[in-house]
Length: 213
Length: 362
Image 1 (cartoon, each protein chain N blue to C red):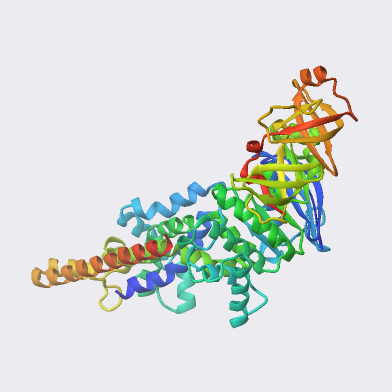
Image 2 (image 1 turned 45 degrees about the horizontal axis):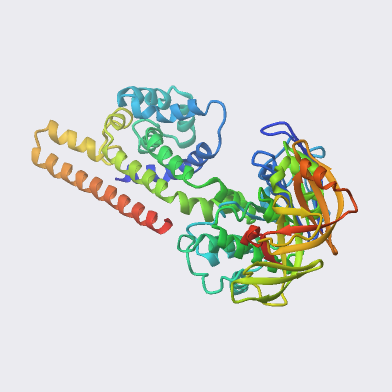
């Protein structure tokens, strides 16, 4: 839960700016960037987790930088897990955000600047309110997907209680120790949370849709 | 306060022209789609950057590619009415207008927004969302919003093309009435010659990114180059007339410099001045005053000059008292009647040939 929340917090600004950039600009190599963003969607979590583990490890430049800055390891820490989670959730956040910004008509954006709004003001007053359904979907998908993520969390985070243990891994541990009752309860909770967040998203976005049409 | 623009480009469409619009003047940029007129408007607003261009408004340089000056759109004091209005759908009409007011705040801003909505005859509709407004009402909100910044240049991009004909007539009349409040240069982009002739002081005709004709609307309408670009069937003249009386059979009598003109009911009170657009191909000529003719309007006229075209037609300028109209007849008819400049003739005009949206207050 904590991991999911932090992932959403870090990923939201990334999604807003990357989604907006990808939605408005066309440039050489845009297809490649989009493919790169999609990569976590198709790679097996073990492959992705393996590369992240290499990148975060104590021998990697990133890992060494982190250790010198904060005096602790990046792998098997909560911070490392958040970073990994942010990266593997990129497609779930950026794609809906991109669709959201693409839904803002070009002439409406142009009208905003013709009304004297600076780009930041236009983003705040016009684009965000109109791209809101896409951003909401991005946040909910990220949240729900992080709750359910298993493979990468296990690879990068290990399963340290209180530090890098997620619900999905806790369920796995319960099943391993034949604690079917505990696994069942936790699974039901996860299903309920997922269902609730997705239902709320649909309800909110249909309300926004009605407001705009 | 005046607007000067020079623009040169090769892509996406060729562009090579320059013109100037004076303060308070309404200039119509006329041309077919793809002629470059909207691109020019976008250049003024800063939404498009041609390869070489200079835009100066009110003595300030907005864009000068040679000097490396390029103000972003939000720093150019410009008002734009977009073809599809581009209202902010999540804001009310009043919020749309207020969003462009940056020189006031708080309740003063709200008052100014209400004043602007009143100016476009929308008082009371401020709390509505754009989706709850008709096309004509949305267009008026867009006009109010474009004026909210106190723009130094007002740009109208085919603002009447997305509404039905009767709404368009009303909006035309409103723009004519609004002109008194507009001290800045106004550029209207349109492909509708009627609209340009009704609303504009001056016209620039563009074809393939080049200026083919420029001048007062009357002069442009009899300019062969302009007619070549716009299509000869657009040849027409504006006749200024005063409403005399409405008859019970649905006809209205107008007074022109050359005599009375009968038209189907004109929506204006007796004494009002109207401008009537008379299409050149609707005008017939006769050497002597014809008898037993169904046409209601037979006006004495003098031939000013004759301009043979490429095809079988000749465009003839006629003086009707103080005014001039155009007639387009065949070469064959010119030869048969032996028409020459300076001749006295009778111009014949069917009442029913005047379209309703070709009559406007003004």
